[in-house]
Length: 121
Figure: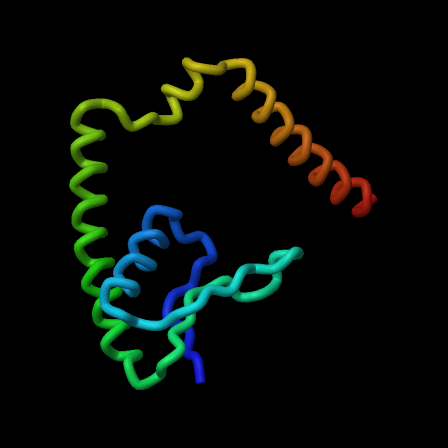
């Protein structure tokens, strides 16, 4: 019976591609399921042979540890070079959009408080 090996929901596409390649390299038979038309099903990679689950899990765990180290180093490098966008950078790039979204947030908050105050009268 098949066993869920890797959940695809919110997983980056490059990571999923790497997982597929690793499983293929190690001759692990797997299949994928999608979230379906409405996004309600479990998207994942399923291992067909339960007997090899521990081996497959070990391979994926090792890959994810090395990926985490690599991604942290990449983030640190980009941060050091000043290429990571901050909130202030986004305000400078598109101030009208930020003002628009802040206005919507304040309007929603005002309407919620006004509704509660009107009910209390």
